[in-house]
Length: 441
Ligand code: HEM
Image (tube, rainbow, N blue to C red; front, side, top):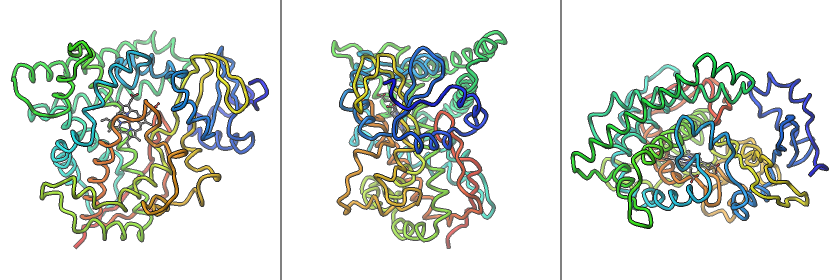
């Protein structure tokens, strides 16, 4: 792989301030200059390779997935705060738990949760301030958190505890971003007690979740929520998940399931606010939809254009804009041999705007996802990842987003004076997503 074009270390150092602020233009510049795959020299032991090559991404995530694992950023750094659940584990341990948890997210099971989801969504959206611009991201953050919280624990007496859990999730994520962006200060974060303080917060979150689980077991009640499904899940030998593992999985579901969805919902709302004609077409689709009637799955099936808008929004602004993997064995891709330990950074953001696959890639054109279109996007459209580690919550997220956007546009006309700005952290977040809501009459 030594013949791959490589960004020299001094270039990275020279641009470090801009990269820290927003690495996307830096990446784009080098993808344009060097092609779809290049190396980056960070002076570390292992090679780092950036790619937006669709075939290589499919190879890593799907065809030869067994030769790749998640990097230590997820399995160590993130895991120290949220534990070793689906998102943060590898190998046989991951496979066993994926097999146990996946059934809880099957479409049929999720149908039973739609009413709970809808109630959480409307409660949050009824807090929208009308007639003045407001940043929609905090609102969508609360909404997505409440939807996961209510779907996991449908108990009524947990509001304060959920609020605390949310604060801890957000605070610890901020700490993780600091650690990720300033790795050279990690010694200081240990010394000044920052890491210890945040680990104590994680312990508090685990204690809160444990209390809720214990109350459920003591009550002997069946709620048919995600917690019941996790409690009912069995290993092949018939035993159930140890309590600590169950808590890890709950922590992972909160982390993986709330911010990504909040980002996608905020970007979709901004795009609709900036494209009144598309919003009007979506309004025509949703204006007679009634989720109150109870047959939610039927109502969701009536929203093909809304779905296209969400899909197109996640093409332009994929919440998981980067995926990482480490080679577990030597492998050959694009005619180059890559050694074991190579760190792969796959740019979904770049792939989703690649001129080889998308006409007018920077434009918001939901029609490109029209179901009657014969185009097949499955090889170069990965908002939920691909292969066996594809997002376990993709159907959950899609149902949640369809109901939210449908409710929002049915009730309000959305407008904005702001351009869309991105804030790439662990996920791709919007910045100043200010929207004015005007009640439709
Ligand atoms: C728009 C919303 C969402 C997006 C864009 C998204 C995206 C993704 C992506 C790209 C991955 C794969 C990461 C990789 O392979 O490295 C992933 C994994 C995962 N997601 Fe999501 N996700 C969303 C919502 C959710 C929700 C709502 C939940 C749960 C309630 C969830 C739970 C998970 C879990 C547990 C994993 C790890 C799966 C595994 O490794 O087996 N996600 N997500």
